[in-house]
Image (tube, rainbow, N blue to C red; front, top):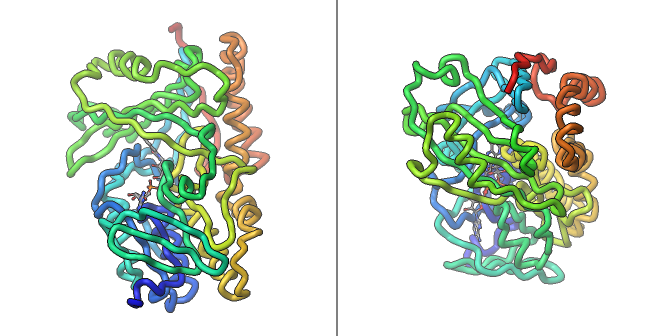
Length: 393
Ligand SMILES: Cc1cc2nc3c(=O)[nH]c(=O)nc-3n(C[C@H](O)[C@H](O)[C@H](O)COP(=O)(O)OP(=O)(O)OC[C@H]3O[C@@H](n4cnc5c(N)ncnc54)[C@H](O)[C@@H]3O)c2cc1C
């Protein structure tokens, strides 16, 4: 057997979850560099459909690894939450940073390689078969026999599908377009403003339309899209393309002029499946935030939890991963996923326009209550939701 096929740990997916797992392993002990391998079917810098917003939750994980967000990004200093004529804002410097995922993930892969991790790219995993004492991983090029496999291969996780874990109910839908802009004419760039517009909740959208200022190869573009959580799968689906078309029209943009792309997002359920002996999931494959669709920071945090579980498994020579769910639920950042799932199921439950409007009137109070109950779940310095205006629609 070649040395590669004898790796102790194979991580499927070189996105934030997989690379963070590898980085945390080598941080725990540099000798992991020779024992862990990351595989990805794509080659960095690869396209990844994403708004690219990284909050302080993700920055904190990076800081723990001795890293900061180095790739080009736009700092967002104000988030505006809109519901009809009600507009609220949260401020910080920054509230979050908008990266391009091809650049961010490529940079993270270089950090992992710089610390000795082998990242094999352009090699898709084709079969995953768990055995009593190891896992057989067949890729397009060779077969691996690691003790542990981490499925960090995104929302459509091949590893999860290979294990026949059926949780097709927990899928959010997202559509996105990029519109070129003149930066100095737009307050989104001049002041660093991002918009989350929930107005279409009354049309059945379980989520929002977003505007994020972004940079593509140094040029200003707005990243615009719709997030439909489907946290309430029993409710009928919103007409996503129509919602996006109307939101763009309000901004004097014609959807037909831009390349429309869509991707699902697999969200978290505390009762979902996260591990079997020798195999654990991380990032989108395990499930992220159904409230706002935040996934990058949580993917990075999964890496920390997954690496800790792997280190302990090798130390005890017990690869059952029976406590992996508890580790996720106890992790300071991942523990927020349970709260966000509950919040999404409540927030996207109501159909009555009057009730939804009334709840939005209470939004500053609700946020104040959350900030008191669990301050970390609002990852900014100033946790006040400030009413900006309340004008007629
Ligand atoms: C339109 C859209 C907008 C979003 N905006 C935001 C945002 O602004 N902020 C935010 O925090 N989150 C956002 N998200 C969510 C975020 O993109 C994900 O949560 C995040 O990418 C999860 O990281 P990951 O490492 O788990 O998976 P991924 O980033 O999807 O990485 C998975 C990797 O696995 C590889 N892979 C897949 N199958 C195989 C296989 N068979 N063999 C080998 N490799 C494989 C893929 O090539 C990929 O590189 C958005 C998502 C979408 C769809």
